[in-house]
Each structure stands twice: as structure tokens, then as C-alpha cells.
Image: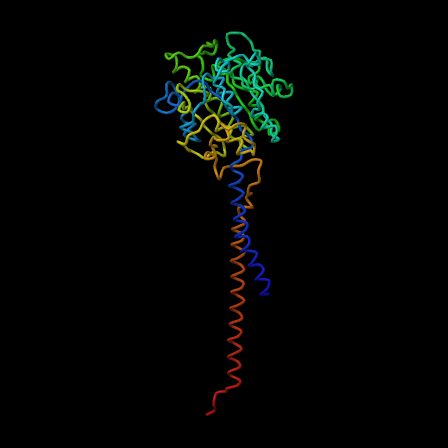
Length: 396
């Protein structure tokens, strides 16, 4: 009987130590690795134009989202104009030179890139990707879109067309799609993206969204007409408010999607460029999702290269260039206790194991104590009986 209690005691101690330690490791390891990342690129506004009390226009939703989830307060764009930033963030290169800094037309003389992109890294790691372009009625690598009063797609906001490794591959071109088929212009939401986020099988690991110029806050628009010119200073509040309104409709649909409700998916929203120069061209950069540290703000320096570094660090992909290799990954934004999808984490039973171990240990100790007490009482009884027999009381 004593040996059995000893074995139960050892089992209980094992449950209290080994299983508790294992459960802790599983949580901290799994929670830092999202299985899906959605990236949304907005346009031409610095952080002090689109966030907080310095906002130029209505930034109520942007500010609330940033304050609820994670905001990088010192995140810098890398070049001017927009195309250079789109290429830098998807390749780790530095394209702030001609013809790219003149917004050249993709796949024309001098305006094509032969070096690898994030797509090469994703596919080499066994992950999937898809790029969603609003108002891109041609889709694929056609570079074509409708020319009407609503359509505000532009090729220089579609970086994937510039990479020879994508443009020359029909299979890869098929991964570049019209985000809002059947609709165009301001608040024509990306229904193709929402559809793919509705099931686990249709969502890609890496999902890029370029809104149209109206939804990005690049140009002044109404629901019936679009103006494809950049917002003048007098119209800046309207453009900022347009972006805020768009995100207020877009983001809840993403965060409430099946993928974000069941997986550790992460949403990253940033602006391509602000109004100054790198490394102080600070723009809003927000992480949101179930595994993001709530209400977390960071003053550490980050840039577009940091997004690449973050994905490479999380997903075990090698850096593409010296720029993303030396950039700081944004790991601080990922929670140590958030819901995790696609990776083993403790189940409810697993979390109860330490308590079960404690219960078993208490039962063992109570049982052992009871046995010991009975032995002591038996010994005392036997001793008393022996003393009475060997030393009878004297007779008078």
C-alpha cells in the first residue's frame, strides 16, 4: 500500500511540474506566430494627419483602432513617391531612384525588377499569397482597368506587376485579383477579400489589399464621382475623413470574419508615405487581431522594412536584402496569451492538469496521513496491551 501511495505522489508532482512548464511553453511559442496576415496600404498621409488630436479631418475610427490594439508611433515610410514604398515593402529593396521614383508604368523599359520579392519567400516556405486590388477590373497581370468616372485603380499601387518573377508566371498572375468585382469607386468594399476570409480553405497566409484612390484617402471623391488627383491642402480633411470612413467599414468585416474569429490572424494597416523624408517620415502603422497586445504603443523606430523583417522572423523565411535583414522586427506587438490558430496550445483540459495534479497530491497526502495515523493508534494500542500483560497491577 505504501508503494502505491508513493507512486501516486510522484505522479502528482510530475503533473504539477512538467505539465505546468509544458503548458507555459506552448502558449508563449504559439501566440507569436499568426497563421494569416492581412496587409492594407493607405495613401499619402503622415501620422499627425491621421491619428489623435492633431488629425486633419475625422480620424475617430483610426484613432480608436490604434488605441485598442497596437500602434507604432515611430514607423517611417522609405521613399517618395508612392511606387518606391510599395516596392520597398514587398522586396526589401531601395527603389527611390529613376525611373521608379517617377511612377513608371510596369514592365516598360527600365521599369521591371528581376530580384526576388516577398512572393518568392512565401512560396519557398510553403505558404500561399494573394493580392487584392480595388477597381482592378482587368485582374491578373493585364494592367488594365475601366476608364470611367468611378474607377480609381492605378498600376503604381500594384507592386506585384513590376516583378519579372510574377509577371512572367500565369499561375502567379492569377493570384492578383479585382478586390471589388462588380463595383467601383468610393466605398466599393473588397468583397473578394471578405469571401476568402469566410473559410479557412480559401484564405491565404499573406493577403495584400490595395484600396482604390478614394478609399485610400488619396483623392477627393463622392459616391457618384471620383477625382484622381492628389488631395490639395484645402481638401486634406475630406481625404482623411474618406479613409477613416472606409476603414470603419472595412476593418470590422475583417476582424469578424471566420478566419480572424478562429485563427491567430493579424491585420496590419499602414500608409505608404507621409510628408517628410526617411527615416523620419512617420506614418500610422497599426497591428490588430486576436493575438495582438491590447492598447500597446511603441516609440521604437520601425519602417516598411520592419514589416518584411517581422514576417521573415515569424515564418522562418530568410531576409531578401540588407535592408530587411537589419530592420527591427515588430515582435513586441504580438501577445503572449492571445488566441492562437494553426498551432498547438493548451486545451481546457491541459490547463486543468496542474489543478488535477494538486488534487491528486492532496488525496495522496490525506491517504498517507490516514494510514500513518492508524498505524500510530494501533501501535499505541498494542503497547498498552503489552504493558498490562507484562506488568500487572499489584494485588492488595
